[in-house]
Amino acid sequence: MEKLIKIFIALSDETSIRIVKLLIKKMCTIFELSEIMSKDEDYIKERLDKLIDVGIVSKINDGKYEVFFVKNTNSIFDKFAKDVVNLLSGYFNSDKIILDDYQKARSINRDELFKRKNPQ
Image (cartoon, rainbow, N blue to C red; front, side, top):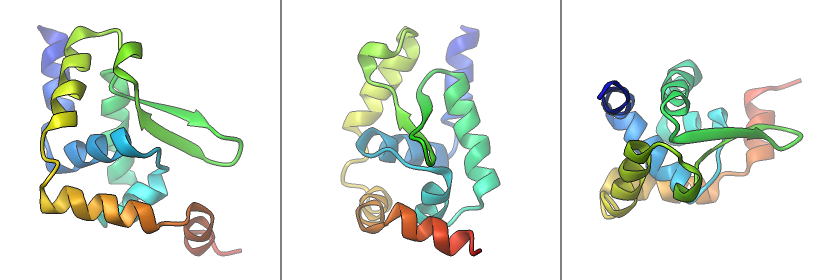
């Protein structure tokens, strides 16, 4: 039961659900998620760390950026986490906030955003 409680805690706020919904569709960096959701990068990182801890989100380094994604349900070993991802995949698809997130994600250029956030 402790694992299930951790999953619910990790998903207990709107931002975490938005992160999962977006990462189901598209791999994103912290700075992209921050831009899309108009939230501080540290706040996004805290949410991502919890989602990673419960096995819903993973990260890879693509050689240039650390990129986050929702694991394919076949690679999620914890049954509770797998069930939650399957559930979230089907819900909130017509929610205005989620649709706005998808639209913003489609229009972001990762390299340009990185340069803007990290001027030399």
